Length: 121
Image (cartoon, rainbow, N blue to C red; front, side, top):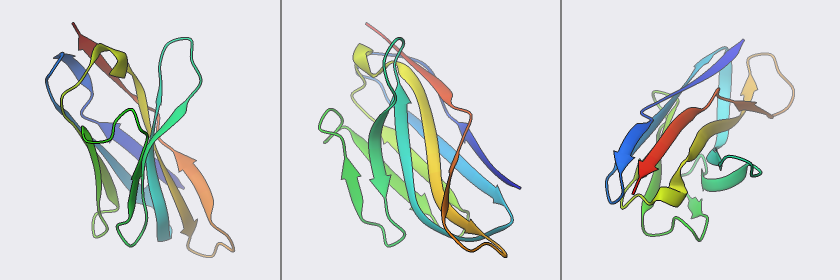
């Protein structure tokens, strides 16, 4: 059983900052990449940022220079530091982890339940 639990969402004014966390727990052997997605109301889920096991990162153009993804491998936790927030950043944010469980034979993707971020103008 694997769980991903996000925290840190909330309501913030435009220009403000939030830091999201996603803690992964369970029978985990190894975690490969970890990602953050967002889903705005009425829109499809989209990739925000990715971080590899080695620390390589990639960002959507819309958040480059404002958001920073990081991870603590010892804690199996991924973070998303969001600065200079805009109303259009309002969405539910989900974390994912590509991991293999103890006794598993392949990497699979696991998702958190999501955390709401609302940016007021």
